[in-house]
Length: 285
Length: 289
Image (cartoon, rainbow over all chains, first blue to last red; front, side, top):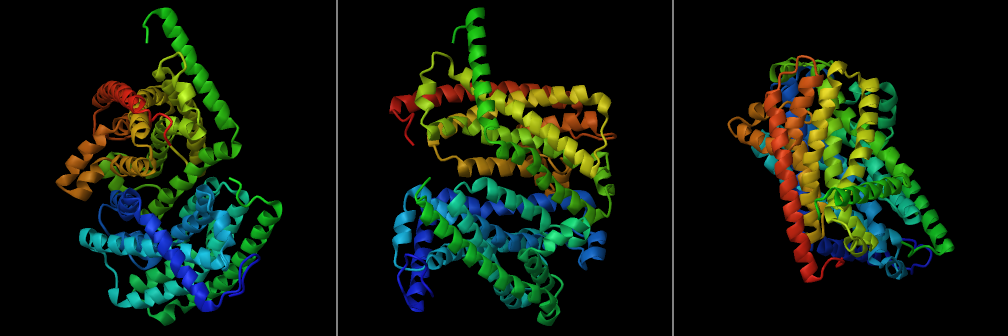
């Protein structure tokens, strides 16, 4: 990995070790706040619950004829839950990566972290993976609980394909995270910005409804977001029992987004980092 | 706190000054003002779109059976507008003293020669004023975008019920302020209470859905829901504004209950806050971060 300005020249193996060490450090820090751990584990269940209860109020049963017509499945419970699972990874990247360096700034450790003789991207990747690892763990717990309570109708045999499909989407999520980390590094105050983006994603992503119900203008914006394709693909594999060949049409734009967002993310982060270093505001609060 | 007229006027002045200061500070962050005025539409819209996906229009037969009205769009617009007050009580009033702690001004405020409650009520008052503005913007925008159909002639009664709810929420704000002053780290607690209220209260779905969804347990979940002032307030406001709405709680019962919980929460909040404040001062931990 090519070192960034100020970083030393480490080999790929050493950079991978840095990723592992940062991941471990983040997990240790995370586990030091058990109330937050409990919150992360259980709260998404309540969010799903309110969407599912709302669905029940609207149709009176766990099956919607209209959804079956629009999305080839009338089982809105499974439909919504798969949407929530994929979007929770998008949100975890959004919050995790944007908070990553801001958190170091709050703790006063950002400058020391930047002095480490390794690539900044190894540090960012370590943070992103730790956030994804905890999200995966909670998603697994939530799927188990939801399957027990609501009887989730998911084709578990397709789970390896779904995970493979998710791996195709992952680089684009990470690329978006790099860009956000860069923007937050310069603009500091991240919560209004990330709150706005989260709310926008909540509207544009097809989490609890198919894209066809969105007004055309919003639908076009939705097509610009990688998580849209990830949700649609995972849903096809896990609920509609599609084969890998049937979701190839969704994988192609995702590969394009992977290349675009990873390049854009690396460029934006490097540019913002240079700006901050030149202005001398790296440690500014 | 003295109860003669002159002292009361002075305390009122302290509350109004605090409210004015808080509003001024809020207006210094115009981006946040725009965010709070507009963003709730982004949170409401997915429910409207989900409704369209599941029933194919703005009316639902199942909703009619559960709530008397099949117009789920107006139902959710009213719900989300009132929910803004809960968020304000939790994240505004509940966090108000913690914010002073962050700013290093809590000790200065607590040695001011006026009652703590005047300061806290001033903060709550500013939150109510701002939230009413946000709720009005949200309701107007949502009505323009999605088309709310309400009985405008009953607006006065609906606003009266909202005012009663705001008073009850002041009590909850006081309780949370006390707890946060004591235990400091508020994020997880506030997020939990926020999500719990959103799930069990009839913000987006009629109260009877809880019985339909949870079966026998649903009755107890509904009872938990009624503990929060938002539930009787929503029942009353919808009965006033939503044509053909059939409330789970009769309007008179909802309003009497709302008046009772207002009294209970305010008394409980003031008592709890006094006890906690004494404890924190004795421990010398007022400014401990």
